[in-house]
Amino acid sequence: MKKIIANFKMNKTPSQIKQYLIDLMARYKDGDKVELGLSIPYPSLPIAKFLIGERKIKLGAQNLSDEEVGKNTGEVSGEMLKDVGVNYVIIGHSERRKKFKEDNKTINNKIKMALKNGLEIILCVGESLSEYNTLKTKDVLTEQLESAFKGLYENELENITVAYEPIWAIGTGKTPSAREIEKASKVIRSVIKEDFSAKASENLQILYGGSINAKNISQFKNLKYSNGFLVGGACLDLAEFLQIINVFI
Ligand code: PGA
Image (cartoon, rainbow, N blue to C red; front, side, top):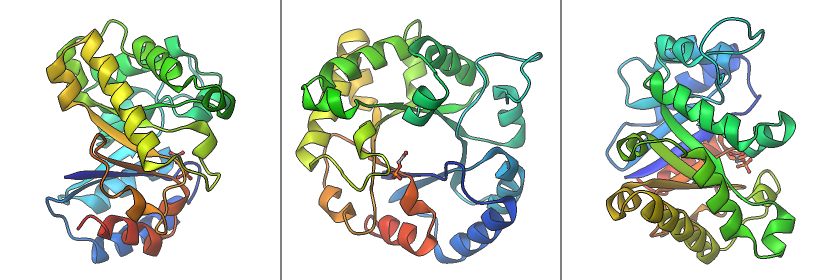
């Protein structure tokens, strides 16, 4: 089963999401080949939950607070997301790390908050262009993973998917080669094996994200060490997103 997760980022109003979902559900059939997840902006979550109903489409948020409740104007808690019917939350996206100054400690706290509230997690990790050029990908991934997973129990990893998203590939039209993605996925698995166990490493779900589109998806169709894709820009156009999904059906 391939996991295909859409990341809408800060795009589409609730009315537009409503129409998108109506169209998507008319054209996409639940099956056992693809696990589909839609990470949409907060205001659209309730209408999306209502429209998805009993369909096997997972509903995701793109962030949550690292605190539980109270004096945090503008923030949204894990408990609120759970109550709305959200299944999973993206944590550590590079846009949040960079623009909103989320450091590894904050990301670790957010993961714990999501787990506490019974939310699944998509944890994003990835190197910058200069780190890529100076062959630091392995070091960066190791550091990001080890700090994100600090204090977690092995069984909690069952609720976490790791998305390898090289920063230089996000929204740029550039991607690593299939071999480079495989190599990064192996690094991710080896960190988990070292810090937890061989079983946790084998069971870990890994996605690739960064400039995936309908034109290049077939290049990455047969990746062995990763389990799916996190799709940003290309999910916004439903026809293109369906083309990506259909490669796996
Ligand atoms: P992109 O974004 O597909 O537009 O490159 C991916 C992401 O940021 O998750």
